[in-house]
Image 1 (tube, rainbow, N blue to C red):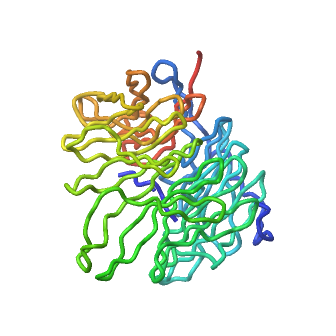
Image 2 (image 1 turned 90 degrees about the vertical axis):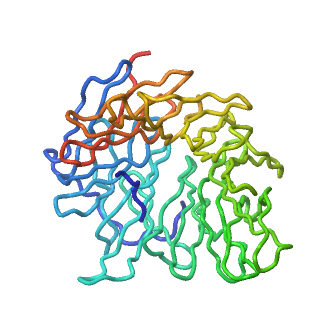
Length: 411
């Protein structure tokens, strides 16, 4: 299971279905307060523990995520209209995380099996929740271990997941029309395939290991479509130590938009990470800050790219050759989390007083979303929907985590 770092379907026969558990209303009350101009601030509440964290937001304003209970275990939830609803558990599992939600309100995530009193090789099961029904998703080679996670759930109900079989392998698995299929890999000896994104057309991108002549592996970016895994190649050269005639340069595909444009990153011969875009089997390097390391974050359906240039750090939006620097809320750092299809960028930035605040940037203007909670220690925006609602989190004075929805009002 993977949690955001903060300081973490005709499916096979239903396995271990349970009724949804609804906590007492006293433990789940949401709090709504006035926010910055154009927003109201909604604290999604809790299950009585110290952490509530959203993972996904759809255009209906539904939020999926995870919240801890007083014992410390995480429970998966869906939040809508002020109510935080526990999704329940598959039989034999003791903790759950919701990791993705689609426009239909379907939710996918992962659950940890109970494994006794002592340390064990943690078994993680994937699930799909749909209108109160909880179903297990079985990869072709069975459940994975601790790094297993859902990567994306499309509006059609298809999903892709990374399944961790450490120490031997990592597999990418896609479910289309309820049928699981392994994405495969490039290495005949160590298949480690890491899916990073999927679009509505069912195209999946990520990275998979390639063997080196001297032993070990490096990564090549891939595009998977209709059962075929395509190596997108690496446009830079780095000779292998074991055979200098073989290129050991690595690259990863990070995202894909509705048009099939693929965003990725690779290290060039000067040792700098550079942003790449593949389209129709052709690759181009992003024409931005040529002598600096670039950390691309996201690509939207317009083909805009958001990222950061480092040394010194500058957050930017690239729009087909035009670069706009986002600036900051003060004099300090700005970090990007997500990019909306209308060109909105969200993340966090340091204020003049050194506080970390969530922001939304659009058309050259950065809006400070504030600390999120009273006496807050910091906040971060994670994702934005088509309405302009922003999901993120805030830390209170006790460093407890609150899931926050900055909900668009008016206009």
